[in-house]
Image 1 (spheres, rainbow, N blue to C red):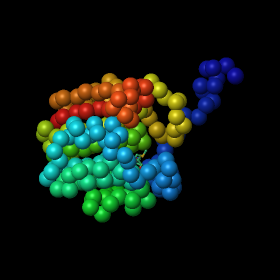
Image 2 (tube, protein in one colour):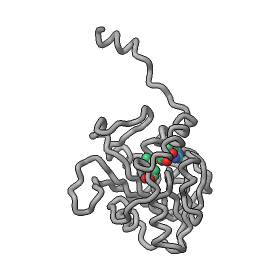
Image 3 (cartoon, rainbow, N blue to C red):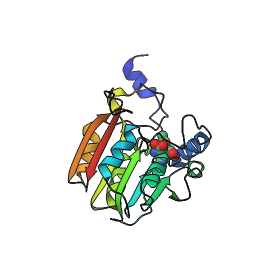
Length: 212
Ligand SMILES: C[S@@+](CC[C@H](N)C(=O)[O-])C[C@H]1O[C@@H](n2cnc3c(N)ncnc32)[C@H](O)[C@@H]1O
């Protein structure tokens, strides 16, 4: 078939309903190998969040798209006096979140929290599933207090195809998220990261750091 004919006849990219994404993650919650409830705190993704946020005692923090709450678990162990909320679309994932963390069911594109009510927000490999990316970024910025900090860890669009991905998943160029963050945050930066601090990043993972 000629390329222009293929263009006409190929179906438009389907818009995936949220309930379908939720159902997939509810099922995935049973797969502890790929969706673990714990994380080695030495992994750089955790270290970066801890280092960028600093002392979290008495601070209010949101893990947006928390899955089973593996990052929130480390933060709470490190800072028992922090008030940590963990939000996810999948209630099956949320069942693994420890009771000391306030688990909340919802979508990161419409966060059920007051504006300027959190000191720190982070999203690790969850924004890539949010579909309406600009709404999710705007929501995370909205609930941050002025001076509050945000970390997003996700995958680099330049490496798209390297892993198997569901239909709705999206990876990002550095400047794409930087530009969205700059709408609400005064300091925005991004960098390539790897799982271990002493291993040169291979370009798959990016971290965006922003301060409102
Ligand atoms: C790859 S997992 C990452 C989980 C967790 N952040 C971690 O690193 O362990 C992606 C998570 O995003 C959640 N998710 C997908 N779409 C979402 C949305 N619109 N709002 C909130 N969470 C969402 C999924 O249910 C899933 O738990």
